[in-house]
Image (cartoon, rainbow, N blue to C red; front, side, top):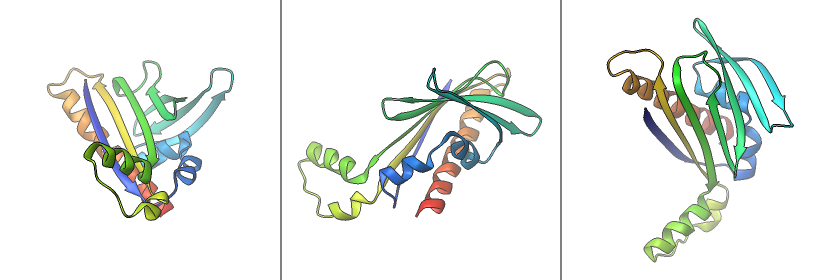
Length: 158
């Protein structure tokens, strides 16, 4: 299994970003699949998105976990034997204050940072096929999808 992480600070408030980060928008922003069905299970607190791509459909199960959006490939259908992703964000000001306290510095640009959000997408993947270097290839592809999602969110919201 391999893990990849991408992050970016974008010019939007955390509240505006959170409104935009619904399961279908996340899947579409990654660029590899289109959403064909959405099933919300309010009693379980999950949303299942059926995503369709070249020659396959796979269910992705989304849930909120302590302020983080978490999703995983559900079931056996799909290219991965294991795939899970975390979408985390915080205001750039809060992130900057934490870093300043660790470094003992003061930051002079707090007002601008209140309208900025630091967004991190992290994913762990393992390919379902027995190819040499399969997990490395899956992680490389997954990192590209996560980077494309960051770019899409920035373009749509800034």
